[in-house]
Length: 245
Ligand code: PXP
Image (cartoon, rainbow, N blue to C red; front, side, top):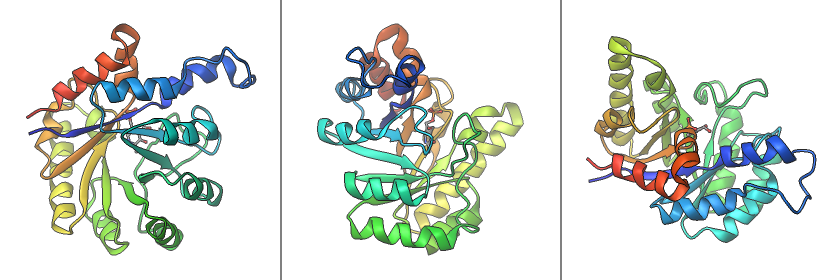
């Protein structure tokens, strides 16, 4: 048995933007996130995740359109629920969309989406995506109230936020793992597919594999970091190995 791996290539674009953010038309623009995505696929990724942020700090619109064209697996477009990005998603038509909260100040996605507070804004987006044949995943904290809210929004998938687990140690980490297990159980009971991600690496991912009915993990930073030393295909392959249980 094995959990499936979606590779998040945002930080390949982060490296590109560090040099070329003001000169994207240059012929020397590298590294190319699409090339990284193809290598991740060769390494065993079942999907490619990219986050089109409102501030376009790493992935830009053109990347999303090129990824959709080039990859052989599925594109998971991570995005905030803003009208501009929703319109782009409806143009690109990725297989999956993962809705995340987004604030301009954060370094990366910080907390899960609050599906209770933002219910009214989420409902039309979920409907528009479902009508377009896009499967929506809600990135939420492992909180029973959020699972119930996701179920009442009829979300087909949730991605459980593993950030608090990844940052904790000792007993606090065990407690976070228990929260994730319970959330996964509740989501499965509600007929929702269980994915998870954020802050996972080659070591801390192992205990996560006990989540009941876990289908897919989305991992970015750790794979891109390892890729600096072994290449992204090999870094992906090593993570695929870690996901066997
Ligand atoms: N899943 C979601 C919803 C995210 O926002 C991120 C970070 O972009 C990831 C997974 C991947 O997190 P990491 O880069 O820490 O592996």
